[in-house]
Image (cartoon, rainbow, N blue to C red; front, side, top):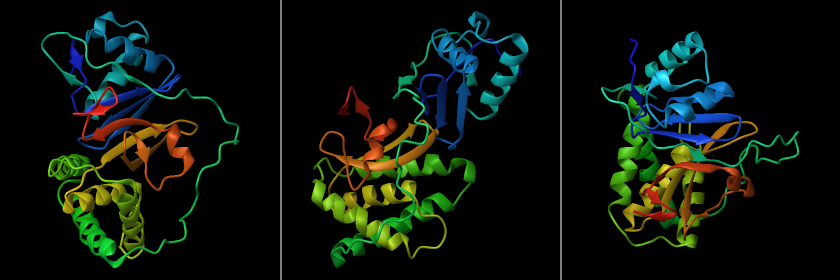
Length: 250
């Protein structure tokens, strides 16, 4: 396939971290990091959608990268050229030389009320089931649909304390769950548990540099991460549910 015009689908998000561009497909979960000239190529292409109008890469490199992005569903062919959403501007990639501290391992479980645990357990079970059943290439799409549905159940905002209790409850329950239970599963389960109580928080999924890594968390009260280490502030949100528009919620 040698299309002339391409675009990034709506389920693809990009963030510019300086010398690196990170692309995430929120349908398949595919992640791609572009460095140097490849990152400039994407930024340039996003302004026109016309492959012949790019100059950041030579022809063979451009074709090789294009094939990779088409295969990953990060670009799709179109009949007419046009710009797509410009990459978000992330926190700059500043080498830390090992001076940044990141939380490692699991924190000591926090005691929570029985009621919070009774909400956390079924919520986490639903999330694990949604991620496990069906094609692996669509697991992220299934999770996004679940979270869209859950946050649409209520417009009453969750407060920080009830959200914190549920975060710790989900983490305690996760210690007993078979398989992987990390930030993605935990944050989704907290969002679902809040919806079961008629409350809504903001689910966030973002990226940070040095090294490039992904993380998911829950926020309340206009961008306040709940039960998160200070290092979460270094993540640039790529996808929020509900979607944010200029810092607010749609």
